[in-house]
Each structure stands twice: as C-alpha cells, then as structure tokens.
Length: 156
Image (cartoon, rainbow, N blue to C red):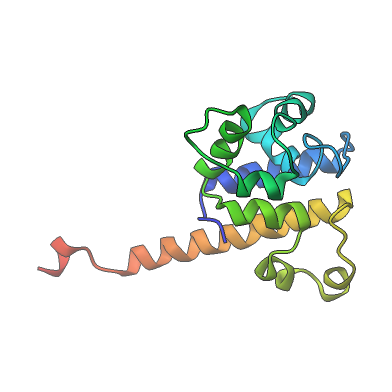
C-alpha cells in the first residue's frame, strides 16, 4: 500500500468530499473516474484536460501505469508522476481504479465489501475515505514508534 503521507491523506479526503458533492463522475472517462478524480485534486487539471492527455496513449489507468515512464515526457506520465510523488505506488492506482486493494477492502464493512462496485460514485467515496483512515492510522503509529525509540544521542 502507499506510503502514508499527510499530503496523500489530504488528497484522498478532498477527492472523496468532492465526489460526495455530486460532481460529474463517469468510470469510463479518464478524467472523471476514480483515478481521474484523484488526479484532478493533485494536479488541478480539469477532467477534460486529463482525459485529453490520457488519450495520447492507449489504455485505461491500469494500462497507463504499466506503460509509465518518468523520462517519456508524455503529459500522462507527468500526471502519474504527480500522484507517485504523494507516496502512491503504481499498483495503488490500478487498485484505486478497480477498488480492489485487499487491505482496504478488509477494512470496509462486510456488507459493503461484498457488493463494492468500482463504477459506483458512492463506493469510490467509501473506498477513498477508508483508505485515508488506514493511512492516518499508519502515520499515527509511525509517529508513536518514533517517539518511543530513543535517538542515538540520548542512548549514549
């Protein structure tokens, strides 16, 4: 799973909140799908801009991550790069598009887990909120560990 960073947690929460307000959502649109909405939050590009640059190379978000090359200078690789800078891994984007990360799904209520639909706005909102919660817990645990572990200077 992604590296827990405050910036990623904020981006996930902002994206979920925006989706929850009823903005245009369409899973088959590269700029208005699960990854497309997160990309909008992070890059501040419009859904139309993201869709346009995504079409410069074949494939959905999952396929785009397979073809990702930071040196390509393709605009879509810049979008993906911006998401990776937050602490995401390429597999996280593939999981987000299909709402299928096993750890996140296990954290969902059982009745929602079984019926989760990657094309559903409400399910995308729930998934992103749950993911942000898991990352917050991980970040808090890391902070607690760091406050307990004596530094090299205090151990001497």
